[in-house]
Amino acid sequence: MKKIIALVLAVVLAASCMFVMASCGDSKNNSSSKKEEAKELHMATNAEFPPYEYMEKNKIVGIDPDIAQAICDKLGYKLVIDNMQFDAIIAAVTSGKADFGMAGMTVTDERKEAVDFTDTYATTTQVIIVRDKDSKVASADDLEGSAIGVQLGTTGDIFASDVKDAKIQRFSKGADAVEALSTGKIDAVIIDSEPAKEFVKAKEGLKILDDPFAEEEYAICLKKGSDLTAEFNKALKELKKDGSLEKIVNKYIGD
Image (cartoon, rainbow, N blue to C red):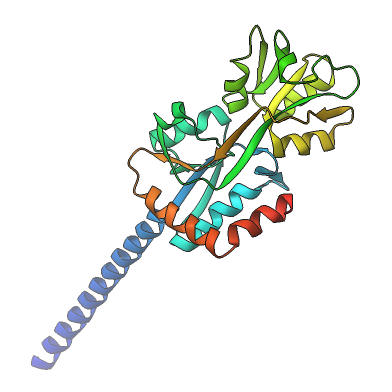
């Protein structure tokens, strides 16, 4: 009888240990899963801005996604890219739906009131696209009273708003503004220089005016007071120092 009782107790003890180990294992897995989720960073972008971000075979590619990936690799985060309208990016960051925004975004005083910016990672210019043969716009001075196409919420939109008597048409995509110009619906498009080159290359009968309209700097936007800002700046500094940043840019637009 003692042997039987001892055997039963042994079985019960073994079962209890297995249950505890299984529970610990589940707890560990859940903890690991939560830790993995915490390492996921969401980048808000607008994939209509080649070569900084655009769609290629259902994937968002370009300078900004590559830089973001390099930063996340350095810091140990998993990058997730969320595509949206350009004018929704800052709202996504401030609301916490996205951890940071990166979309060829120019640093402006107005935007700095809503978000924090990292150090600059690119310097570019705003340019004017016109039709090659019948354009009445030969310089920035000729924009007065003209019909100007811009992408909604961009610095091109901001700059165009300062042109006297301009008839501004706002589009959700830069490509749509360029199409309107090509078909004669507007007189000019104000947009960043690198996307402008891509659009003109893809559409016959258009050209970029020689004189830049304005100069600007790109940076990554983050929620006010975010700890990520210092982390991102450190990573950007390292990417600049070791030549990785330059290599990414050259991959898409050359030296």
